Image (cartoon, rainbow, N blue to C red):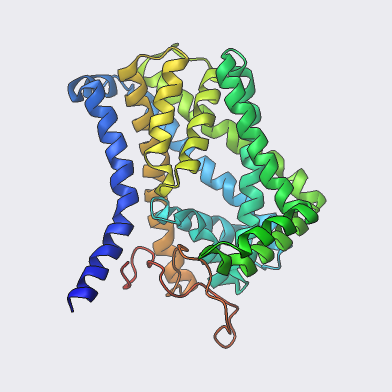
Length: 353
């Protein structure tokens, strides 16, 4: 009994640890700037900007759903654009859960009866293109800061390297051969092969490139939202190109931190980059925290409302967040393989992590 109880607590600690680290970083930033000065800086936010920022936040996820639609159609889903947008919003309800970024893939696989691996491939392609465009938007601002330009160049090289691994077959085969020798993660090789096949198929389609214009609008919109938050606190302090540079570096740092929703990594890098472009420390902390509230905070609100609707409208009962990968094996009758064990349930369901 004691071993089982210890294992249970260990599992809970493992789940909570990313949150604790991320929140710890945010709290440390607030303490470092002095909580009173943080409140003073945050209270300078001009409320006139609030509905504009909220609209940009909503527009980002709306465009994300629109951009996702042709990719989903390419892998065999029969969803209408309205359905894709609703499920994309619903996936944001788990944006701050471990693996929450892939919730929308699970929801679509449940509703459209397609393999979750195929829907993950669509997200992989969508995010690769979006990240490249985000980095491109950061270049003008980065050119004013030599070391930062080097960092942005390295980030772009990293994204291109990932794209090369997925699309150049000999390189991919060498990576797979290496992964097969590694403990634990070697069991994900079949999923990796499926992901690569679907990703290459999508990247070779002409409409994948043509629809990237929507991803460009997403990148411009989310950078503008960040810039507006800074403007609302300290008007004229930061130019749009510098805001693009700071936001891009923070986004990449958040992704590399592997925290839920980039929690902690985004805030730390965002504050650092804003200081580099001339923003006072207390303003940088307030702007970064408020931007995250507008992004992930409002995204979670929008997502929760959409998830309640989607659960009733589409009869969702078993949609779960991917954390440990897709269980392989024979799917239930009439249903392609779906994520099963070890996955925390979406909000509003009975299963708990």
